[in-house]
Length: 190
Length: 190
DNA sequence: TACGGTGATGAGACCAAGTCCCATCACTGT
DNA sequence: ACAGTGATGGGACTTGGTCTCATCACCGTA
Image 1: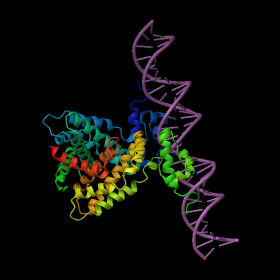
Image 2: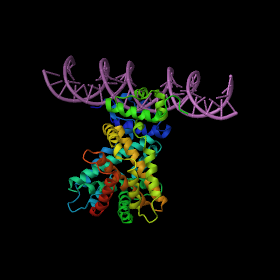
Image 3: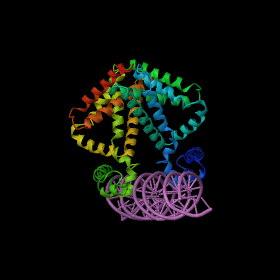
Image 4: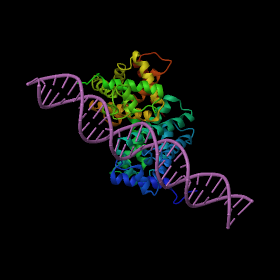
């Protein structure tokens, strides 16, 4: 069904990351990304609604991964157990071989405020997906959104640590440690 | 120091809200907003970096209000007490007379995804301001960011309820109730 | 082999957001 | 009266993003 070379979307995404690292996000035009991928500007916007979105391709998969992990957790699992299962599932994506790529991507995001803003949207969407999955389990609402928000915070912290220079541990380990630290901090609130 | 009419920034903000309500956010150009305010398009972007920002004028004041309330809380105040004081301070801004205006503004934001995204950024900034203020009080970091995140969530929920059709209560009352509900939900996590 | 249908692409016109530069105007103090 | 200051107007310019139409490769079928 493709025309010439297949995987247009992936070619666009990797061309974009290359160019962002070479010239910076703002100094790279959508037309240049398309050109490096051997495509036209109009084709770029057929695959990505935004110039920003080209860096957030796997987000839908992540949402489904988290949601399915929570939905599929055993009935005996508490809300914290369920979101813990979601963090385990995340380790499927954040594997050691992908760390370099995630680091590059994150460096680009850190360098531009539009991208950081989009990242916030993605995190909020992920938290909403987790809250939805928890509600499907029968968890009622202050608790469901709270657990989702805690998990989102743990995920953010774990992601930062996992990308950072000092750490080589498994993503799931870091994430669980962060989630546990947040649970413990609950006792320090008053 | 102004040239003709003063308060150019306020005129732009209210002209923008009017036009957004009349024609919708996307169907309103920055040039049209400026024209209704009796100004030029270039002057609009001198006062607001974004077309979106014209709806988020008071955000800096809110950040300072929250930060100062936390910094100024008595030494004996727990982290939850301190963010509770911030929610009290918010009632200074969310007064009954402003409810209609906040409702209009919120209706515009709800109708456009770019604006919702910007709203997330503003909430994250507010949470960061609260976490900073807590750290200034000596609260260490998993606890500080957790308390700030909880307060941000309570603020979001309270804001939604206060803007909603059924409720006429004081903002501080609603916010404290929401914060308390989140604290209580902590026990339901596992 | 010829043919029509389908889906992805190329090309370009077009609009609005946002940047930049420079001239201009009102106001202030001397 | 005069120069300095700060906000404004105006317009050129780049780029993100939309839209439309023609084109091309592929696929099934007669």
